[in-house]
Image (cartoon, rainbow, N blue to C red; front, side, top):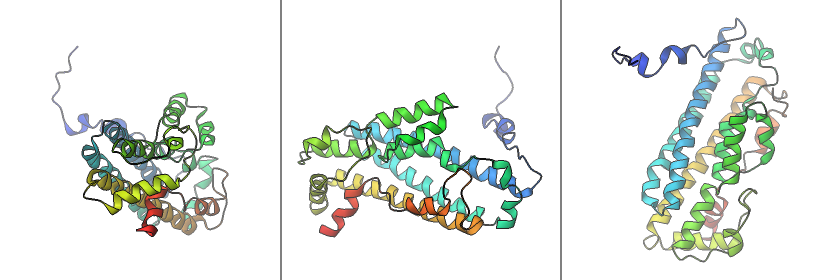
Length: 265
């Protein structure tokens, strides 16, 4: 049967289904805010994953200029995610304490989409797979990202195809493993930054990646501030040390040589 009803704003966006997804487990007003913020984050993460997949495929095809748009969109999505912490900080510690118990052991630490993005950027840690044992489709998506070359792997390969001397052990490495900084990769991209006119497409691509790394660092920092403001030094709901764990992630960099080469310029 063909649905002959005219398309409306609500039908196109499936608003009835979307707005039925917020189901607080307490009678505290602030729980709705908590749910809306985290659900909206997951929607933005979904879009960021889509953009990263597109950018990776374009870099693989040496269509570097085409990848700029998707990567720029990712960094802007990250800015929106970071700003959302400002809304959450309107919830006081007393407000959160009133409904925190209904969360049980659940935590943003368990977000499969956030971990998928980390994997796609090159921050690979297979331990996070086990948090999705009850969701086979989510685990499969994470495993696909874990097993595939990251955005940085593909950028390094593009640099090699452009004639830059990339060490063979980097090009042939096991992409499932966490990336380890390479002096050879740093030297190659130092050449890119010293000769931007010659390597303009790689140079601009590298700066788009720095935007993403920078935005990720800003998100992590704002996350720490927000959690400390709301729960202080309490243990996180997912069993982590809370603020202590989050602070330990602040130094993560997906594209380390793009940061270290700046000292040598």
